[in-house]
Image (tube, rainbow over all chains, first blue to last red; front, top):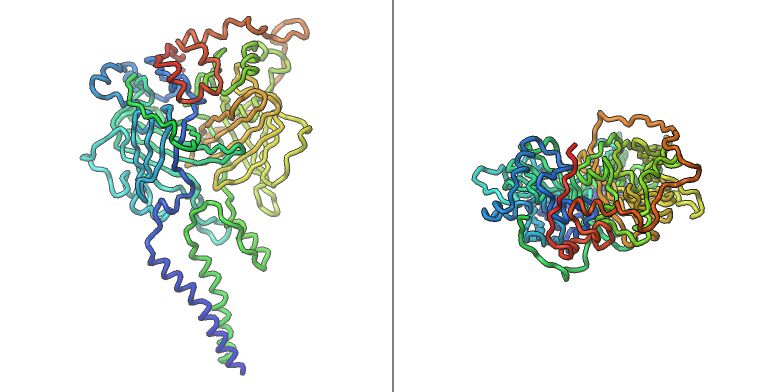
Length: 276
Length: 320
C-alpha cells in the first residue's frame, strides 16, 4: 500500500512538471516578439507641440548671434556669426534647421506611425521631414544587445560610404528598468515605458534657425515618454533631447519638448523648409 | 533508506521545483504595469512577490544640476517685464502682471519668500533628492526634494489622503506620488499663491500641480503641469532637465530680513492699471508684436506663427 502511494506521488510530480517544461521548450522555439508587439505605450498618432518654452527662439527667427542657452564653444560661436540664410537658400540647404537634433523643437504637428514591425516613423509638418526610428535586429527581445554593440544602424557599424542626411540614422530600443540579478530585491528587467533613440550619420545643420551649428560629428540621444491621461484627458509626449558635438559644443546640450495628443490629423498642414 | 521514503522525497522535490521553474521563465509582458501577484501562504514570500511585481519605479536619490539650455534669460537673470510669451494666462493674470513692480521683492514679507513647488523647477537652483524609508517594511514612504533657497518638499508615497481644502496652504503644498511604470507622477494641492513667471504673472492658491519625474540615464526630466482656475485658461506645461552631478552640494541659505528701502509703512510697490508704459519695452526692443508678448493660450500653439507672420527677432540676450 505504502509503495503504491509513493509511486503515485512520483508519477503525480512528474506529470505536474511536464506541462511547464514543455511550455518552456515551446517558448524557446518561438520567434521573439517584434518591437511593435511589445511596445509598452502607444506612441502613434498626431501630436502638436505646445510652445511654452524658448518661445523667442522657436516661434520667430532669432537674431543672428543670439545663441544664448546653447553651450557653444568658440568655434561654434564663430560659425554661428557667419549665418547667411540667403546663402543657404541658394545652396539648396534651406532644411539645415530641420535636422534630427532640431526638428522636435520646431513648432508644429508630428505624426507617428509604425512603418513596419521594427520601424517607427515620424512625419513632421515643419519642413515636411520624415524620421525613421529602426529597432536593431536583436531588439525583438527586449533588453538584448546594446546600441554600442550593434553600431548606430543596429546591424553593424556605419561605414564611411553611408550617406549622411538631415535625419541621419536612428536606432531605437525600448528602455528597460532594472537589471535583475540578486536572489531577493532585484527587480527583473521590465519595460520602463520609454523609447530610447540614438541618431548619428547626420549632415551638418543648425540647432536653431539662426545658424547655431551642429557638425556632422554630432550624436543625438533622445528619450520619448508618453504621459497621462491627465485628469482632463490630455495625453502628452515628452521628448528629452541630448546633443553631443565635439566640434561645436562644450558639453551636452539638453532640451525637452512636449507635445499634446490630437484626436486626428484634421489640422495637418505640412510646410516646406525655410532658411529664415 | 527505504524505497518508500526515497520516493516520497523525490516527489516532494519535484513538487517544490515546479514553482521555481515557473518563476524562472517569465513571459515578456507588453505592459509596464503588471497585475497584482497571487497571494501565497507565506507572509515573507508574499512581500517579496509584491516587491518584484509592483511598478516600483526608480531611485531619484542624488544631486541634480539644473541645465539652463531652455529659457536661460528667464531662469537665471530673470524675465523681462511684459514677457508673457507662450503662457495661457487670462485677462485677470495679465492685469495683475502689468501692475506689478519688481521692487515689491524688497518688502520684508517678500525678501525670504521661496519659489513655490510649481515654479522652483525653473528657478536657478541646484536640487537634492532623497528618500525616506520605513525601517521595518523598507518601503519608500516619501521622497524629498530640496533646492537652494527653497523649502523641503515632501512627496508622500504611503497612500495618505490629501487634507481638507481648508487646511493650511504652503509654498511646497501637499504632494502625493504614485508610480506609472517607472515614471513618478505627483499631485500637489494646498499651494500658497505664487507665480508662473517671476515678472508678476500670478498663480492662485486654488491651483493644482501635476508632475511627472522621468529618469533616463543620468538625466532627470520633469514635466510640471499647472492647472489654475483663477489665472489660466488651459493647463500650463513645462518640461525641465537636470543632470546628475555627484560633486554638487546644496549649501545652506540662511535668509535674514533687512530694511532694503526706506519707505513709509504700509506702502506696497505697484503700478495702477494702464499706467506702466514699460511693459511694452520688451516687445519694442525685440521687434515682436505687443499682442504676442501679452501671452494667452493662443500664443503657445504653433499656428500662432501664421497670425504674426515671418518675423526675425532683434533681441540678442547678453552673453554669459
